[in-house]
Image (tube, rainbow, N blue to C red):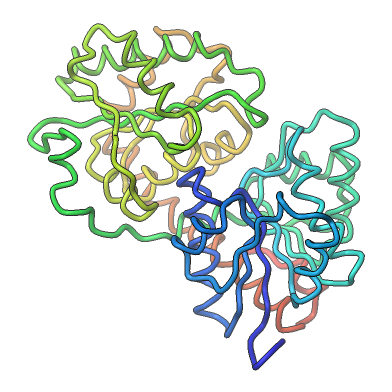
Length: 381
């Protein structure tokens, strides 16, 4: 602690790549500031973006720094936070765990914040995850599938299941005439779609398969419900825009589809998604934003973190690999017919998700203040 402020470091997939990850960071920072007097350092991919978006004192480009440079940054902290988000998977786990290992070496308490895990098939990655998290002061995950996987790879410390902090974010007003600039006619039914690119978190995704599925489903909704289809790129700096346009290119009713072009904050995107009658998609935070706004949704669960959300909300969905066009359309049609019931189910379940998300911050605050760790570790929301 310096000048009465607790010095907290937060490391995750931050730096403006993904609106969901930025929503996670915004929520973590906001809750911490409401609870304690803190000085926050974010370990990020893009320091300028992080300082522009978030109410934090410092940002460091950890991936561009040597181990010794990172060590200097961690030495000045009182607590190091890993997460949130789905950051522990093959190909990336070692990168995110470097700062955790350094914090352990220095003796800085590590708090694992509402993460997801997987896929973790690489033996070295599994070993590093178990080693890094077994020395953490507190481990929290945002879904039970993540808890089970971490236990499977050898994490023996108590793992508390909480929820994604983004569920606590509140929408802000959209920029003036944003809907008009995007070509969205509020007098028509609007249906939101989300895509994602293959990557470490979704290594087995068949792009042509899911492009065809979504194009077919979008055409169905135009024909059946007279809806306009709005594609939401949650990762503008990566390939979401290209994948959105690739799906539109396969549509027969492409003139009724549009890809959101403007750059929005996470809170603004929450507000935008609130204008949809239904949402169909893959990205976790697109689905979380839909649930937050009471928008019924149909998910294509490419990863356990999406499956975990569906299980909590008691919303069925077929696995991406086994779903075909007919099965997806049947699921969409069923959800459309029962959308009020789905909306009610979400409204009944979502408050518990919010309570679980607040509990993560409660645990972190107790750790920072030096309260009983054993009690913290065994605590459940």
